[in-house]
Picture 1 (cartoon, rainbow, N blue to C red):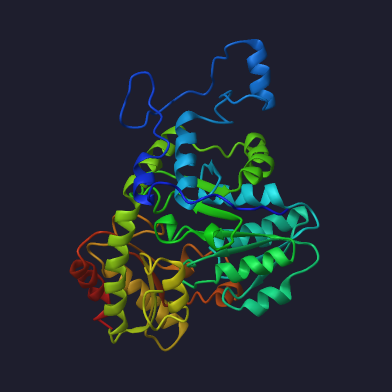
Picture 2: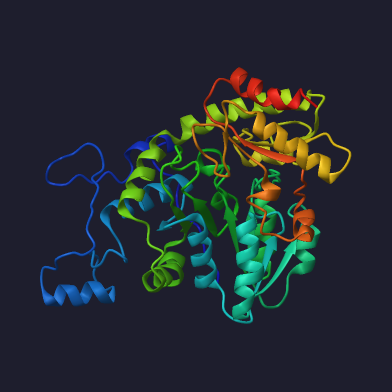
Length: 405
Protein backbone atom coordinates (compact mmCIF):
# COMPACT_ATOMS: atom_id res chain seq x y z
CA UNK A 1 0.00 0.00 0.00
CA UNK A 2 2.93 2.26 -0.61
CA UNK A 3 2.45 5.48 -2.54
CA UNK A 4 5.08 7.97 -3.61
CA UNK A 5 4.29 11.65 -3.90
CA UNK A 6 6.92 12.96 -6.27
CA UNK A 7 4.88 15.70 -7.90
CA UNK A 8 7.18 18.62 -8.83
CA UNK A 9 6.34 22.08 -7.65
CA UNK A 10 3.99 23.81 -10.12
CA UNK A 11 5.38 26.45 -12.43
CA UNK A 12 2.77 28.94 -11.22
CA UNK A 13 2.14 30.20 -7.71
CA UNK A 14 -0.87 28.79 -5.85
CA UNK A 15 -2.76 32.08 -6.15
CA UNK A 16 -2.50 31.76 -9.91
CA UNK A 17 -3.40 28.07 -9.94
CA UNK A 18 -6.53 28.84 -7.91
CA UNK A 19 -7.75 31.09 -10.73
CA UNK A 20 -6.26 29.55 -13.87
CA UNK A 21 -5.80 25.81 -13.42
CA UNK A 22 -8.23 23.55 -15.32
CA UNK A 23 -9.94 26.29 -17.31
CA UNK A 24 -10.94 24.30 -20.38
CA UNK A 25 -13.03 26.48 -22.66
CA UNK A 26 -15.53 24.97 -25.06
CA UNK A 27 -15.87 25.98 -28.69
CA UNK A 28 -17.57 29.15 -27.47
CA UNK A 29 -14.47 30.42 -25.69
CA UNK A 30 -16.06 31.25 -22.34
CA UNK A 31 -13.72 32.82 -19.78
CA UNK A 32 -15.54 31.32 -16.80
CA UNK A 33 -15.66 27.55 -16.41
CA UNK A 34 -18.66 25.98 -18.08
CA UNK A 35 -21.29 24.06 -16.12
CA UNK A 36 -22.12 20.76 -17.80
CA UNK A 37 -25.50 19.46 -16.66
CA UNK A 38 -25.89 16.02 -18.19
CA UNK A 39 -26.32 12.51 -16.84
CA UNK A 40 -25.01 10.74 -19.94
CA UNK A 41 -22.73 11.21 -22.94
CA UNK A 42 -23.15 10.26 -26.59
CA UNK A 43 -20.31 8.01 -27.74
CA UNK A 44 -18.60 8.42 -31.14
CA UNK A 45 -18.79 4.70 -31.90
CA UNK A 46 -19.54 1.35 -30.29
CA UNK A 47 -15.84 0.51 -30.20
CA UNK A 48 -14.99 3.82 -28.54
CA UNK A 49 -17.74 3.27 -25.99
CA UNK A 50 -16.32 -0.15 -25.16
CA UNK A 51 -12.82 1.27 -24.73
CA UNK A 52 -14.03 4.12 -22.54
CA UNK A 53 -16.11 1.92 -20.26
CA UNK A 54 -13.20 -0.49 -19.87
CA UNK A 55 -10.79 2.33 -19.08
CA UNK A 56 -8.60 1.79 -22.12
CA UNK A 57 -9.47 5.24 -23.49
CA UNK A 58 -10.19 8.54 -21.79
CA UNK A 59 -13.65 9.94 -22.25
CA UNK A 60 -16.84 10.59 -20.33
CA UNK A 61 -19.38 7.79 -20.26
CA UNK A 62 -21.90 8.29 -17.45
CA UNK A 63 -22.61 11.02 -14.92
CA UNK A 64 -21.88 8.77 -11.94
CA UNK A 65 -18.38 8.13 -13.29
CA UNK A 66 -17.33 11.63 -14.27
CA UNK A 67 -18.24 15.06 -15.60
CA UNK A 68 -16.16 17.86 -17.23
CA UNK A 69 -17.07 20.42 -14.55
CA UNK A 70 -16.33 17.95 -11.76
CA UNK A 71 -13.01 17.07 -13.40
CA UNK A 72 -12.06 20.76 -13.54
CA UNK A 73 -12.66 21.07 -9.81
CA UNK A 74 -10.60 17.93 -9.12
CA UNK A 75 -7.69 19.11 -11.26
CA UNK A 76 -7.61 22.52 -9.61
CA UNK A 77 -7.79 21.13 -6.07
CA UNK A 78 -5.05 18.60 -6.82
CA UNK A 79 -2.85 21.39 -8.16
CA UNK A 80 -3.39 23.48 -5.02
CA UNK A 81 -2.54 20.51 -2.77
CA UNK A 82 0.49 19.50 -4.82
CA UNK A 83 -1.07 16.11 -5.53
CA UNK A 84 -1.04 14.02 -8.68
CA UNK A 85 -4.81 13.62 -8.65
CA UNK A 86 -8.03 14.25 -6.76
CA UNK A 87 -11.42 12.57 -6.70
CA UNK A 88 -14.51 14.37 -5.46
CA UNK A 89 -17.57 13.18 -3.57
CA UNK A 90 -20.98 14.50 -2.58
CA UNK A 91 -19.79 15.48 0.93
CA UNK A 92 -16.77 15.44 3.20
CA UNK A 93 -18.05 12.36 5.02
CA UNK A 94 -18.54 10.73 1.63
CA UNK A 95 -14.84 11.29 0.99
CA UNK A 96 -13.91 9.62 4.29
CA UNK A 97 -16.20 6.69 3.49
CA UNK A 98 -14.59 6.35 0.06
CA UNK A 99 -11.16 6.45 1.72
CA UNK A 100 -12.06 3.63 4.10
CA UNK A 101 -13.84 1.49 1.51
CA UNK A 102 -10.93 1.87 -0.89
CA UNK A 103 -8.15 1.05 1.56
CA UNK A 104 -9.64 -1.21 4.25
CA UNK A 105 -11.19 -4.68 4.43
CA UNK A 106 -12.40 -7.00 7.19
CA UNK A 107 -9.55 -7.75 9.56
CA UNK A 108 -7.66 -4.52 8.85
CA UNK A 109 -6.87 -2.00 11.56
CA UNK A 110 -7.16 1.78 11.34
CA UNK A 111 -5.41 4.03 13.85
CA UNK A 112 -7.23 7.30 14.38
CA UNK A 113 -6.95 10.48 16.42
CA UNK A 114 -9.61 10.56 19.12
CA UNK A 115 -9.98 14.28 18.46
CA UNK A 116 -11.48 13.75 15.01
CA UNK A 117 -14.83 15.16 13.93
CA UNK A 118 -17.67 13.37 15.74
CA UNK A 119 -19.14 11.80 12.59
CA UNK A 120 -15.72 10.46 11.61
CA UNK A 121 -15.33 8.81 15.00
CA UNK A 122 -18.75 7.18 14.67
CA UNK A 123 -18.14 6.02 11.10
CA UNK A 124 -14.82 4.38 11.92
CA UNK A 125 -15.48 3.23 15.46
CA UNK A 126 -19.06 1.97 15.03
CA UNK A 127 -20.17 1.66 11.41
CA UNK A 128 -17.00 0.09 9.99
CA UNK A 129 -16.77 -2.23 12.99
CA UNK A 130 -19.91 -3.98 11.71
CA UNK A 131 -17.89 -5.04 8.66
CA UNK A 132 -14.90 -6.33 10.60
CA UNK A 133 -12.63 -3.27 10.47
CA UNK A 134 -10.79 -2.78 13.75
CA UNK A 135 -9.95 0.67 15.09
CA UNK A 136 -7.98 2.32 17.87
CA UNK A 137 -8.30 5.96 18.90
CA UNK A 138 -5.32 7.73 20.46
CA UNK A 139 -4.44 11.21 21.69
CA UNK A 140 -3.79 13.42 18.69
CA UNK A 141 -0.56 14.95 19.97
CA UNK A 142 0.98 11.90 21.72
CA UNK A 143 3.37 10.42 19.14
CA UNK A 144 4.35 7.57 21.45
CA UNK A 145 0.67 6.60 21.77
CA UNK A 146 0.49 6.35 17.98
CA UNK A 147 3.62 4.18 17.88
CA UNK A 148 2.38 1.92 20.67
CA UNK A 149 -1.03 1.42 19.01
CA UNK A 150 0.34 0.26 15.65
CA UNK A 151 -0.40 -3.41 14.93
CA UNK A 152 0.67 -5.88 12.30
CA UNK A 153 -2.68 -5.38 10.54
CA UNK A 154 -2.62 -1.56 10.68
CA UNK A 155 -3.31 -0.24 7.19
CA UNK A 156 -4.27 3.39 7.77
CA UNK A 157 -3.45 6.25 10.13
CA UNK A 158 -6.01 9.04 10.13
CA UNK A 159 -5.62 12.50 11.64
CA UNK A 160 -7.22 15.92 11.39
CA UNK A 161 -5.13 19.03 11.86
CA UNK A 162 -6.17 21.40 13.27
CA UNK A 163 -8.95 19.38 14.89
CA UNK A 164 -12.61 20.24 15.22
CA UNK A 165 -13.26 22.01 17.57
CA UNK A 166 -10.22 22.18 19.88
CA UNK A 167 -7.73 23.06 17.11
CA UNK A 168 -5.19 20.43 18.17
CA UNK A 169 -2.29 20.22 15.75
CA UNK A 170 -0.52 16.96 14.93
CA UNK A 171 3.00 16.56 13.61
CA UNK A 172 2.22 15.44 10.05
CA UNK A 173 5.80 14.52 9.17
CA UNK A 174 6.21 12.41 12.31
CA UNK A 175 2.92 10.58 11.76
CA UNK A 176 3.88 9.90 8.15
CA UNK A 177 7.10 8.26 9.35
CA UNK A 178 5.17 6.10 11.83
CA UNK A 179 2.70 5.06 9.15
CA UNK A 180 5.28 4.23 6.52
CA UNK A 181 7.45 2.26 8.95
CA UNK A 182 4.38 0.13 9.62
CA UNK A 183 3.62 -0.32 5.92
CA UNK A 184 0.51 1.81 6.27
CA UNK A 185 -0.73 5.05 4.75
CA UNK A 186 -1.34 8.40 6.42
CA UNK A 187 -4.50 10.35 5.58
CA UNK A 188 -4.86 13.92 6.84
CA UNK A 189 -8.09 15.88 7.02
CA UNK A 190 -7.09 19.37 5.84
CA UNK A 191 -10.53 20.94 6.17
CA UNK A 192 -9.61 23.66 8.67
CA UNK A 193 -6.35 24.84 7.11
CA UNK A 194 -7.01 24.16 3.39
CA UNK A 195 -4.15 24.24 0.86
CA UNK A 196 -4.05 28.01 1.31
CA UNK A 197 -2.35 27.46 4.69
CA UNK A 198 -1.16 23.86 4.74
CA UNK A 199 -0.20 21.11 2.28
CA UNK A 200 0.06 17.77 4.11
CA UNK A 201 1.44 15.85 1.13
CA UNK A 202 4.56 18.01 1.17
CA UNK A 203 5.10 16.73 4.73
CA UNK A 204 4.69 13.07 3.82
CA UNK A 205 0.94 12.42 3.95
CA UNK A 206 -0.37 9.97 1.36
CA UNK A 207 -3.97 11.20 1.20
CA UNK A 208 -5.51 14.60 1.93
CA UNK A 209 -9.20 14.75 2.85
CA UNK A 210 -11.46 17.73 2.20
CA UNK A 211 -14.94 18.79 3.04
CA UNK A 212 -15.52 21.25 0.22
CA UNK A 213 -18.67 22.28 2.07
CA UNK A 214 -16.47 24.39 4.31
CA UNK A 215 -13.73 26.81 3.23
CA UNK A 216 -13.27 25.54 -0.32
CA UNK A 217 -16.74 26.82 -1.15
CA UNK A 218 -16.48 29.57 1.44
CA UNK A 219 -20.03 30.88 1.40
CA UNK A 220 -22.12 28.03 2.78
CA UNK A 221 -23.85 27.27 -0.52
CA UNK A 222 -23.30 23.60 -1.39
CA UNK A 223 -21.92 20.32 -0.06
CA UNK A 224 -18.82 18.65 -1.49
CA UNK A 225 -15.90 16.43 -0.54
CA UNK A 226 -12.66 15.20 -2.08
CA UNK A 227 -9.58 13.04 -1.66
CA UNK A 228 -6.19 14.14 -3.01
CA UNK A 229 -3.58 11.45 -3.54
CA UNK A 230 -1.27 9.79 -6.02
CA UNK A 231 -2.71 8.89 -9.41
CA UNK A 232 -2.29 5.22 -8.53
CA UNK A 233 -4.35 5.46 -5.36
CA UNK A 234 -7.07 7.47 -7.06
CA UNK A 235 -7.29 5.15 -10.06
CA UNK A 236 -6.86 1.79 -8.36
CA UNK A 237 -8.40 2.30 -4.91
CA UNK A 238 -10.86 5.19 -4.88
CA UNK A 239 -12.36 5.43 -8.36
CA UNK A 240 -13.74 1.87 -8.32
CA UNK A 241 -15.55 2.67 -5.06
CA UNK A 242 -16.98 5.87 -6.51
CA UNK A 243 -18.27 4.07 -9.59
CA UNK A 244 -19.94 1.34 -7.56
CA UNK A 245 -21.20 3.29 -4.54
CA UNK A 246 -22.23 6.47 -6.34
CA UNK A 247 -21.21 9.14 -3.81
CA UNK A 248 -20.75 11.38 -6.87
CA UNK A 249 -20.38 15.15 -6.63
CA UNK A 250 -23.10 16.99 -8.54
CA UNK A 251 -21.79 19.16 -11.42
CA UNK A 252 -23.48 22.28 -10.09
CA UNK A 253 -21.90 21.82 -6.66
CA UNK A 254 -18.53 21.21 -8.30
CA UNK A 255 -18.90 24.43 -10.30
CA UNK A 256 -19.74 26.43 -7.16
CA UNK A 257 -16.73 25.09 -5.24
CA UNK A 258 -14.51 25.51 -8.29
CA UNK A 259 -15.35 29.22 -8.29
CA UNK A 260 -14.87 29.34 -4.51
CA UNK A 261 -11.28 28.17 -4.91
CA UNK A 262 -10.49 31.37 -6.78
CA UNK A 263 -10.80 33.43 -3.59
CA UNK A 264 -9.64 30.77 -1.12
CA UNK A 265 -6.28 32.29 -0.24
CA UNK A 266 -7.65 35.82 0.22
CA UNK A 267 -10.55 34.61 2.35
CA UNK A 268 -8.46 32.32 4.54
CA UNK A 269 -5.93 34.98 5.37
CA UNK A 270 -8.54 37.65 6.05
CA UNK A 271 -10.60 35.33 8.25
CA UNK A 272 -7.50 34.05 10.03
CA UNK A 273 -6.48 37.62 10.90
CA UNK A 274 -9.89 38.21 12.45
CA UNK A 275 -9.70 34.88 14.28
CA UNK A 276 -6.39 35.82 15.86
CA UNK A 277 -7.79 39.15 17.02
CA UNK A 278 -10.85 37.41 18.47
CA UNK A 279 -8.72 34.81 20.25
CA UNK A 280 -6.57 37.53 21.82
CA UNK A 281 -9.70 39.37 22.98
CA UNK A 282 -11.28 36.22 24.43
CA UNK A 283 -8.07 35.32 26.26
CA UNK A 284 -8.37 38.56 28.24
CA UNK A 285 -12.09 38.22 29.04
CA UNK A 286 -12.97 37.49 32.66
CA UNK A 287 -15.81 35.10 31.71
CA UNK A 288 -13.58 32.91 29.56
CA UNK A 289 -11.77 29.98 31.16
CA UNK A 290 -9.61 28.95 28.22
CA UNK A 291 -9.10 29.73 24.52
CA UNK A 292 -8.10 27.22 21.86
CA UNK A 293 -6.42 28.74 18.82
CA UNK A 294 -3.13 27.68 17.16
CA UNK A 295 -2.14 31.27 16.49
CA UNK A 296 -1.87 32.05 20.20
CA UNK A 297 1.50 31.54 21.90
CA UNK A 298 -0.44 29.83 24.71
CA UNK A 299 -1.56 27.04 22.37
CA UNK A 300 0.37 23.80 23.18
CA UNK A 301 1.29 23.24 19.53
CA UNK A 302 1.74 26.90 18.58
CA UNK A 303 5.28 26.51 17.21
CA UNK A 304 4.37 23.43 15.17
CA UNK A 305 1.24 25.10 13.82
CA UNK A 306 3.16 28.17 12.69
CA UNK A 307 5.62 25.89 10.92
CA UNK A 308 3.07 23.61 9.24
CA UNK A 309 0.38 26.20 8.52
CA UNK A 310 2.42 28.88 6.78
CA UNK A 311 2.59 30.99 9.92
CA UNK A 312 -1.18 31.30 10.13
CA UNK A 313 -3.56 29.99 12.80
CA UNK A 314 -6.65 29.45 10.67
CA UNK A 315 -10.16 30.81 11.07
CA UNK A 316 -11.61 28.68 13.88
CA UNK A 317 -11.47 29.66 17.56
CA UNK A 318 -12.89 27.66 20.45
CA UNK A 319 -13.26 28.76 24.05
CA UNK A 320 -14.64 27.54 27.36
CA UNK A 321 -16.85 29.74 29.49
CA UNK A 322 -15.91 30.03 33.14
CA UNK A 323 -18.18 27.87 35.31
CA UNK A 324 -18.17 25.80 38.52
CA UNK A 325 -19.64 22.58 37.08
CA UNK A 326 -20.90 20.98 33.85
CA UNK A 327 -24.53 22.07 34.31
CA UNK A 328 -23.57 25.69 34.87
CA UNK A 329 -21.13 25.53 31.97
CA UNK A 330 -23.85 24.31 29.60
CA UNK A 331 -26.31 26.95 30.83
CA UNK A 332 -23.77 29.74 30.39
CA UNK A 333 -22.71 28.52 26.96
CA UNK A 334 -26.35 28.45 25.85
CA UNK A 335 -26.80 31.95 27.28
CA UNK A 336 -23.92 33.27 25.17
CA UNK A 337 -25.39 31.69 22.05
CA UNK A 338 -28.93 32.91 22.72
CA UNK A 339 -27.70 36.45 23.43
CA UNK A 340 -26.19 36.91 19.97
CA UNK A 341 -27.93 39.37 17.65
CA UNK A 342 -25.49 39.40 14.72
CA UNK A 343 -23.60 36.12 14.52
CA UNK A 344 -25.23 32.92 13.29
CA UNK A 345 -25.96 29.93 15.52
CA UNK A 346 -24.95 27.16 13.13
CA UNK A 347 -22.88 23.97 13.21
CA UNK A 348 -21.41 24.60 9.77
CA UNK A 349 -18.13 26.45 9.26
CA UNK A 350 -16.18 28.06 6.45
CA UNK A 351 -18.75 30.72 5.60
CA UNK A 352 -18.09 34.42 5.08
CA UNK A 353 -20.56 34.87 7.95
CA UNK A 354 -19.31 34.06 11.45
CA UNK A 355 -20.91 30.83 12.69
CA UNK A 356 -21.04 29.89 16.36
CA UNK A 357 -21.86 26.44 17.77
CA UNK A 358 -22.02 24.34 20.95
CA UNK A 359 -20.15 21.15 19.95
CA UNK A 360 -21.21 18.99 22.93
CA UNK A 361 -24.87 19.17 21.93
CA UNK A 362 -24.52 19.35 18.14
CA UNK A 363 -21.53 18.16 16.11
CA UNK A 364 -20.37 15.80 18.89
CA UNK A 365 -23.83 15.16 20.33
CA UNK A 366 -24.02 11.59 19.02
CA UNK A 367 -20.91 10.56 20.95
CA UNK A 368 -21.11 9.00 24.37
CA UNK A 369 -20.14 11.16 27.32
CA UNK A 370 -16.96 9.11 27.67
CA UNK A 371 -16.07 9.74 24.03
CA UNK A 372 -16.71 13.46 24.46
CA UNK A 373 -14.52 13.54 27.55
CA UNK A 374 -11.75 11.70 25.69
CA UNK A 375 -12.00 14.27 22.91
CA UNK A 376 -11.98 17.16 25.41
CA UNK A 377 -15.46 18.37 24.46
CA UNK A 378 -16.92 19.97 27.59
CA UNK A 379 -20.37 21.46 28.11
CA UNK A 380 -18.94 24.97 28.35
CA UNK A 381 -17.12 24.80 25.00
CA UNK A 382 -18.14 27.19 22.22
CA UNK A 383 -16.71 27.07 18.70
CA UNK A 384 -16.49 30.20 16.55
CA UNK A 385 -15.84 29.86 12.83
CA UNK A 386 -14.84 33.45 12.14
CA UNK A 387 -16.17 35.12 9.02
CA UNK A 388 -15.54 38.45 7.35
CA UNK A 389 -17.52 40.83 9.57
CA UNK A 390 -15.60 43.61 11.29
CA UNK A 391 -13.75 42.23 14.30
CA UNK A 392 -15.24 44.85 16.64
CA UNK A 393 -18.75 43.69 15.72
CA UNK A 394 -17.85 40.03 16.26
CA UNK A 395 -16.43 40.76 19.72
CA UNK A 396 -19.35 43.01 20.67
CA UNK A 397 -21.91 40.35 19.79
CA UNK A 398 -20.19 37.68 21.88
CA UNK A 399 -19.75 40.16 24.72
CA UNK A 400 -23.55 40.44 25.09
CA UNK A 401 -23.67 37.05 26.72
CA UNK A 402 -20.20 36.89 28.22
CA UNK A 403 -20.56 40.07 30.27
CA UNK A 404 -23.86 39.09 31.88
CA UNK A 405 -22.77 36.26 34.18
